[in-house]
Image (cartoon, rainbow, N blue to C red; front, top):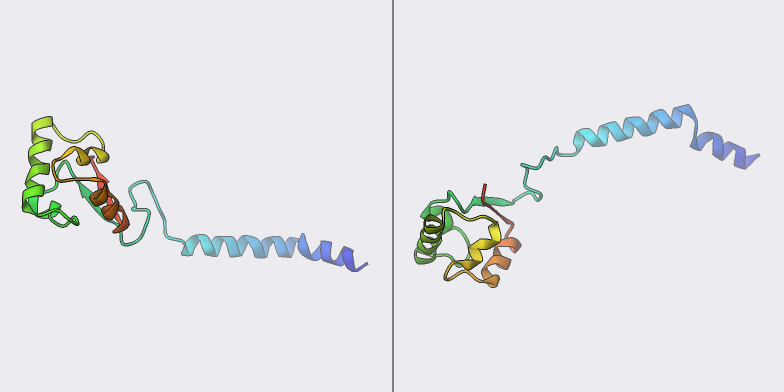
Length: 110
């Protein structure tokens, strides 16, 4: 008899409505995300095909000289095709790339 009671409480229409209400409330409280929304709060976005020297200078390990290398590279080749292509620029290596990711940078080309 006590097991029947558990079954009834677990799957009763009242319990169903309660679960629906809880789900609706939590979906209202959850931040809406889209493909345009950075995955992590605090992420910084930079488009390496349009960024100015000053914007590029915000990246860890990039000073005026390397920022100019990035701009020269993209102008000579008509832009970067993929974000990882920035590692082809003189002065950019895996260490810098990894550090930018750790800092929450999202590197874009479009």
